[in-house]
Length: 374
Ligand SMILES: Cc1cc2nc3c(=O)[nH]c(=O)nc-3n(C[C@H](O)[C@H](O)[C@H](O)COP(=O)(O)OP(=O)(O)OC[C@H]3O[C@@H](n4cnc5c(N)ncnc54)[C@H](O)[C@@H]3O)c2cc1C
Image 1: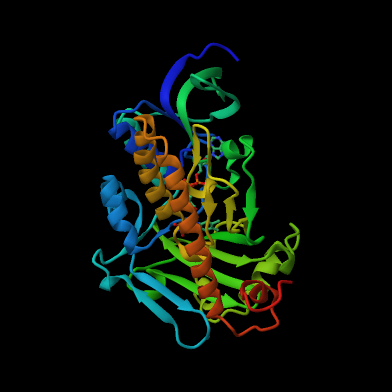
Image 2: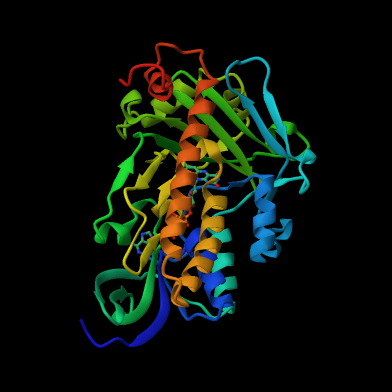
């Protein structure tokens, strides 16, 4: 490794919602921070819905202004779900929440706006950047980073891994990913999704089916995103079959299919992981994992972004304490993460237990704890 060209108090690997929230907290606490982001805020990103409970988190972080209607994100009135029966939808109406609405973010636009905001507070964000090597010495970390301009080495007192589900830095520290399932999402974008006068196009829609469940979210600019969540062994994902698989599953829905009929598909179905996972340990000497790198939730929860923002903001405080000499702060925070994950597992199980219509379906049997795991 070459001599360090820059010295930071904290390096954050990953500039998604969680990494950016951490960076913002740390720079506000007067620490020197660099975020190493492998992308450029131009590539598509997954996850758009923020429930109304997220609005107070945006306010606490001071970023609610970047999420108002004028900036390309859509207000969302609630969630309609056909779960447990096909006739009577359950409606969660955000009107009754103090903030009165949720948001369907346009991503990566949100991440880019957030990154610009964090830069204005003097954090360095290196795009197209990746950690190539790292070495921990008594003086701190020496991190070799590759960017489009070449390689350089930076020095840091502490590293936060906010690299999402890949948990790339933590895995370099011999932390292992524990997957709870193999769940995937088939994702497709639509246009011509007019609203918001019609309930169906200003609500999130969720509908369970024999091999999983469907999700639709209206987005800004009359666009929408639709997903089928299932297990990879329950659907034919071969390139030549994926369209047929999509339509075969869609044809069995009662709410989603009729609504999509008037919308135009913009993309073919794309597959991504939607599994629940966690790391076997969240921290080590002078490093800590947060957000999806530490633990990733089922999209059913719609909690991934808000969890990332909350954990990032809190981790910024915790690392500030650590750097001020309170070294036990990291282990205490890790105990909080353990409690969050354990509560999540219980809640997820409770949600899936309320759908009992397909007793023979592998998808549902795998999620009903009282039944054998197949
Ligand atoms: C199908 C699906 C639907 C979802 N829907 C929702 C939803 O509606 N609402 C919701 O709240 N959540 C949703 N989620 C979850 C949500 O997307 C994530 O929980 C959230 O984005 C996590 O934020 P994060 O910052 O921890 O990680 P990420 O958003 O994954 O950010 C990680 C960042 O790290 C960067 N990175 C990765 N590896 C490296 C590396 N080696 N070096 C440098 N940088 C790296 C990435 O480019 C990225 O910018 C969904 C997830 C899935 C799978």
